[in-house]
Amino acid sequence: MITTRMDPEKARWVGTGIPPRLRGLTFNDVEEMGGQAEAVKKARHFVNGYRAQQSKNWRGLPTSPNVYGLGLLFAGQPGTGKTTLAAAVLCELRRRYGLTVYCARYSDHIERERKLVRADQNVDPEQISRWQYAVERVQWADVVLLDDVGHEHSTDSKFAEDTLERLLRQRYDEGRPTLITTNLSGDDWAARYSKPLRSFMDQCTRRQIFTGESYRRGDQ
Ligand SMILES: Nc1ncnc2c1ncn2[C@@H]1O[C@H](COP(=O)(O)OP(=O)(O)OP(=O)(O)O)[C@@H](O)[C@H]1O
Ligand SMILES: [Mg+2]
Image 1 (cartoon, helix red, strand yellow):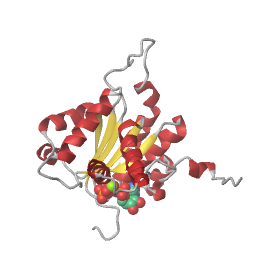
Image 2 (tube, rainbow, N blue to C red):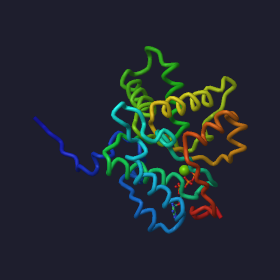
Image 3 (cartoon, rainbow, N blue to C red):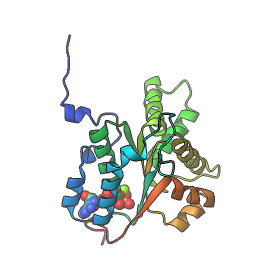
Image 4 (cartoon, rainbow, N blue to C red):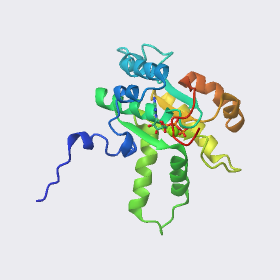
């Protein structure tokens, strides 16, 4: 029998959807990059407090209902480090507590949902099960990062908008935190999605605005 061995550090990130260049990232790594000190501090606080936030009493009820299932919303201009820090949060949670984490660009998630709805017998079943795996991870992973919300394609049917609302409410009701990164401001958010969803975001996430110039060379 042929057995293939994988480096355990590599194996930890398989199936997490985290882009390879961000896999295994720590808060120390992000601090060394130099920017967004306040956001990094809040991200550390979130990970340090994760167990307490999610704890339940002997009856299975959350001991801190106000924060149970609370996620993070990173909003700000392109290139300010939102995806990098959000990926570090996932990596720290996975490494420290062994949680199932999953990362998807929201536009990719919506594409997969659309393709699953449309799929017929001509589509390779293995392809379908890969899409299904990804879609189910977004629904059921302990903590999920929906990256770049607002960049997905919008249609008359409002499929992407409705899916986001359903997903966030379902995850919050199940007590599963969601991390979101977006370039949209609060007003953009209310216009694109809805005022009720904008208001629900304040309930189900802590907002962190990323200020300053883009760190990407060429953006300035
Ligand atoms: N805290 C930081 N300090 C300095 N540079 C950083 C920091 N975080 C990320 N960077 C660098 O800035 C660049 C952009 O980071 P990132 O992709 O996380 O930004 P973003 O806010 O997600 O952008 P977008 O809104 O376009 O998705 C990357 O090259 C990254 O290495
Ligand atoms: Mg990003």
